Image (cartoon, rainbow, N blue to C red; front, side, top):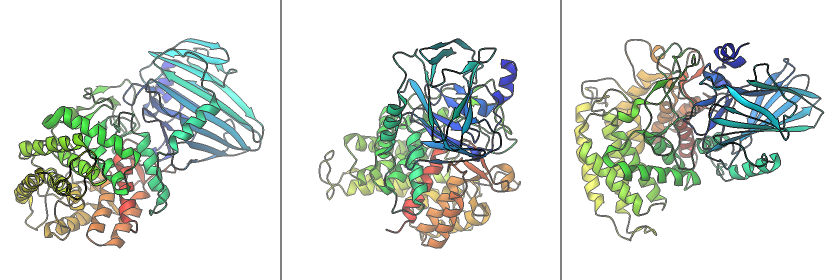
Length: 599
């Protein structure tokens, strides 16, 4: 097959339903691995770089380790509290492949660790490596040096150790090898991909595995006191894997996976959204002052202090503006449009993000993690709300600018939360703040009251909140201000909103965002898993623990065997839709598990 033919065919690794993929990550980039042992998505050196492996979206490039015997069934599992994955195949032999992106991560170099083991019986596995990538790179300077294969693909260098007997394809674009293992035998493979030429000896597998295990050990705290303890700890691991050393967390590892079949709506989520990161910080803070919270608060604080009222909705993980949208030269995931890079969200004003920032900073203060920069950032965010709260904004769903009720109510919740912490200063001094209540507290409470009074223009004749003035539809986003305390849970508008969202946007235990038009809900998009977890939290706040548990259990089941959640769930086809792993869904699962657990 020609190089062009391989790329058109997705490099011989056909796409799978999204539930079948497992996720590897080191904080600086992430990979998806299918049930056939094929890594079909990886961007290097960082999240938003062009993909090296792009078979997921119909491009070139992939790295597979899979049984030579086609008669097998697949399974897999993560080592607890980590993203160290074991692919497992049962056939004529039982074979496992332990895999991880090595940690601590080098921002300039990805290191893939794969260790094949014959668990039971004599195992034969096939290795295939193609680094042609999504941009049609050609592999150059392929050579075997000191027992390792090295070469270049575009601007990237690679080195594969543990496969000295591999043979290149006739066109020099692939390496292939069959490995035979006796019962109990192991074989290590290490693939380095970097923007610089490899220097020095390759990583020693035992040392690299030990360092990776040590790096994961503190990442996910003990969750044994929580309901769904393993899922909650796994959510910590996924969120850690999505978080760069800068403290920025990407919304998802992928781009352009469609939100519904035969839809042109697909986006690049390999960037750090302010709102999403605040959701994650609040989820972690609900459990305790864990490691993941520090980086979240640091990144958000830096961005607020740098950009003030012009805070952008999203940034790269290095804090830079997002690039504009461009189409990739690949066919795209089945059912979606051509894959894209970049995102046009940078030009939007999203008022609710300032409210979420204040809630995050208030949570940090509550846990004693505040300092002078925390309160400076709170002042900047509150001033931005005071300056801009009456302006139309794109809102949580990033739509055409309107005076969205949710955006204003989120600001009310954020102002109330930070005012409460500012007023507690006298009883809870910290190293970063002098004792005594801050004078801002009264000002912020008064601004919250003023904004709440303005939302009377979005009260439906039935007594519930509606999306915006002139838009009478309910919106699941209006559940969040109830959870965050914009109004008391017994507020009649809140109760009426909860009931209407459940009745008109619910389907079989899942929740849609809003009704797009006269079509049935499922024809417009999938159910939004974030909203399903919000419904669980809302029911808990309203005092209905049985309903809260029901919503929680239904939505946490909407994942694949690897426990990875996408943004949406197709209720009727029982399929995952959208980019993955979707960070705010894992955060919502974590927060729900914490809050629904006995205290």
